[in-house]
Length: 81
Image 1 (cartoon, rainbow, N blue to C red):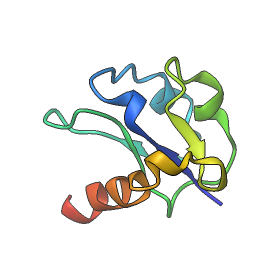
Image 2 (image 1 turned 120 degrees about the vertical axis):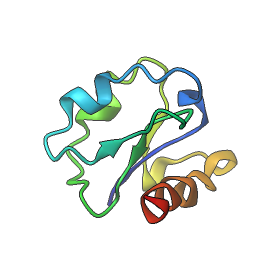
Image 3 (image 1 turned 90 degrees about the vertical axis):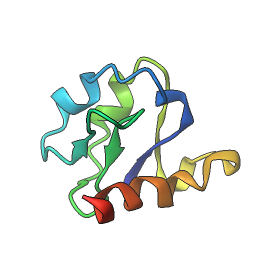
C-alpha cells in the first residue's frame, strides 16, 4: 500500500509532511500547486497522514472516490521530472 496526496493540498503546500517522511518520497517544485508522494518510495508508515494540516493525505485504499484521479496526478509528477 502507499499514500496519495489529494486536492485539499492544492495551494497550501505546508511542507510538514515532507519534513516527517522517513524515506523522503514527498516532493514538489516551485511551479507545482501541491506536494506529491512517490509510491515507489512510500513505506506506508503513515507519518505524513498524521501531520497533514488539511487532511489531504490518504492511503490508497482509503482515498475518497472523488479524488481517485490523484493516484495518477501523483504518479505523473514523477514521470515528468
